[in-house]
Length: 281
Length: 123
Ligand SMILES: C[S@@+](CC[C@H](N)C(=O)[O-])C[C@H]1O[C@@H](n2cnc3c(N)ncnc32)[C@H](O)[C@@H]1O
Ligand SMILES: [Zn+2]
Image 1 (tube, chains in turn yellow, blue):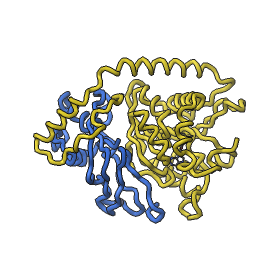
Image 2 (image 1 turned 30 degrees about the horizontal axis):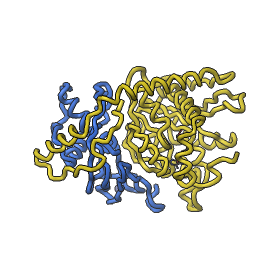
Image 3 (image 1 turned 90 degrees about the vertical axis):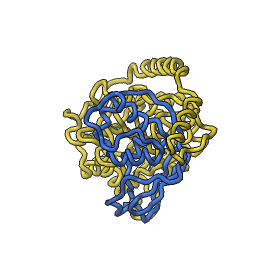
Image 4 (image 1 turned 180 degrees about the horizontal axis):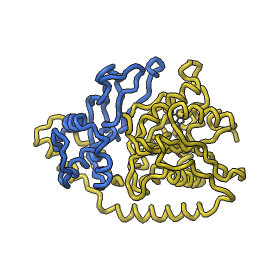
């Protein structure tokens, strides 16, 4: 199968139809979930502490749901409006931004406790236009430089991607290094054609004081079971939360309170007021 | 779903716009209030990242005056509750954010800010 990034620009490739197809495909759900769990493991966050994370190329929020399940808050950026729309429909809890990561971020220094990116940055290796500002090295440089500054010191960014050659890995790591990152590449299941996965494991500062982790060896094992368990837990969680979402009345009361406090610009009530969402955390 | 937690982290990223580019000013906004689970640990961990004056001003722009002008040194439950509401329960759904320096307008539609830049604005 030919690589999506060679077919069309991402915001075109992931149009309405593909965005839905992608998100509903249970095989894709499973693979993206497994990689997200692995990325979280490589992030090496302090245990039992809720973190504030950036999901780069968050798409429809498949990873975001896992970050939520693990108790973290997140911000997601993606260039494809249709993917973000599916994320909205799925009522993810992260704040979403329409953004081209090749243009760089505007987040203040030290904003995030970590960043993940699943199956995204291979898209940065293709020139979008003939304009010099859109050459892959320029885009990668802006991306890594502004990502580095958006992260807290120490912290990590873990980016799983699909390189098509060792030269691409070289190019990406050298630009990440120039942008100030330490760390390196982790390859899981290097000898398996199907299960092999490449993770760029980048450190800000000492990245939490460890060596670059080792890749997993042998055959992929146990991941599927973990995934199935997660779906069950998730379902139970949703069911148990259904009853305690504050209702529209509560929200309208709150708005009324604002109005009585003398705020003229309290927004009008809309059809979405009190729409049921899963609460954060 | 821009909430003040992310608005407080966001500066303008237009090429050459490096000073006075924070905080972005809200314009013509519509907000929604939605409850979120209270998590004191998360809030305590997030506190050091906050630009306090920007948060207080933004909250006032959106009609919430529950935060003290000065960041308190004593962190009690009442304060954390107010902070929780301001950071996580006010959703800006429509409108725009405008850079105080270069005046670039970042439109917000269905809660999603459009951060895309034109070719000449890319650094
Ligand atoms: C294979 S999907 C992965 C989505 C999500 N990370 C997941 O694991 O389900 C690749 C995503 O990268 C996004 N993407 C590609 N190039 C991008 C860019 N320059 N800026 C932001 N997002 C981009 C696409 O829109 C798409 O949502
Ligand atoms: Zn600006």
